[in-house]
Amino acid sequence: MKISKNEVDLKNLREYTQNKLQRDSLESIIKEKKKREVDLKELINELKEKIKKGEKEISTILKKYEIMDTEKLIELKNNLQSKLSEQKTLVNQLKSEKAELRETLGSENTNLVHLESDLQNLQNDLMKKQDLRKKLEYLKDLKNWLVNEFQVLIRDIEREILAYSALQFNEYFKDWFRILVDDENIEVEIQRDDFQPTITVNGYESPFRDLSGGEKSALSLAYRLALNKIINERYHEIKTKDLLILDEPTDGFSQQQINKMQDIFEVLNTAQMIIISHETNLDSFVTDIFNFKKENHITKVTKES
Image (cartoon, rainbow, N blue to C red; front, side, top):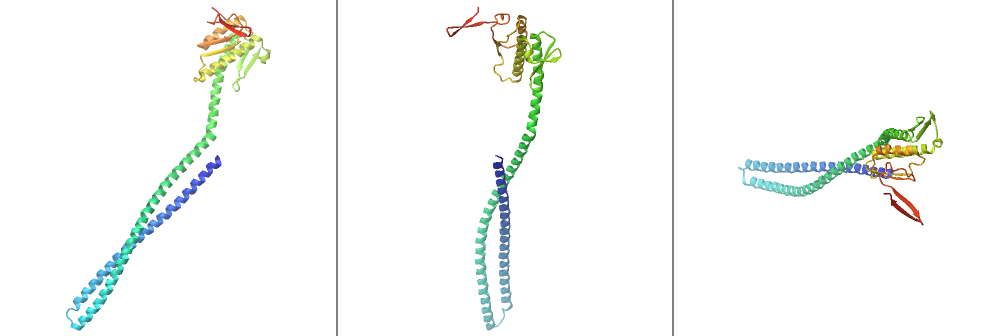
């Protein structure tokens, strides 16, 4: 992908250089054509002046020799006719050259129009290439920012969010565990870097396996409920935040711990909760009880009245 993009950049740079050379060449040709047109106009004007000067000289000569004898007049006439013939030949030659110059000038003007059009197209292409070059530089800068700075920024933001989430998670986790386990000798806490629970018994760190069955269930339930609370607060697009399903959350609980669960559920303020349990003494905080009984490979569901 990077090689392909560099080839495109190199191709654009070559086209840019070639277009600039063509534009410079066209500008030089246009300047030369315009200079030639000016030179041709000056030559025509110079020839016109010579014709006027010759006519004036002939007129002066005729006035000078008005009063002469017949032979001299005839000789002068012949000389004047010869000069006049030469002048006519010169005039015809100049007219022919003038016609050729006009034709050449018309062709050059046509070429000039085409060259100016080509020059304008080259200038437009050059402006587009310059815009593309600016956009390419912007994209390169944006890429460098994304690679070198954006990832670091995202990492720092994620760390801040994670640290704040861990702080809230730890508060819920500790409070709800304390409600379920009323033993000041047992302390629990969440590690902020990996969200792993730490258990301290009488001031010493203790593994999870050393807890009693009720303490293990209380820690697991407090952890799951705290995690559910943080996720629902952080991600509002979750469509199941008003539904909580618990599978055997009271395993190993005493009746006192079961009764304390209601305090936690009131804090959660969940619209609907489904508890799957073999306990028969959950009547204090449930509204509907459904019994599932399997007979002859068929599960029957009945609702207690």
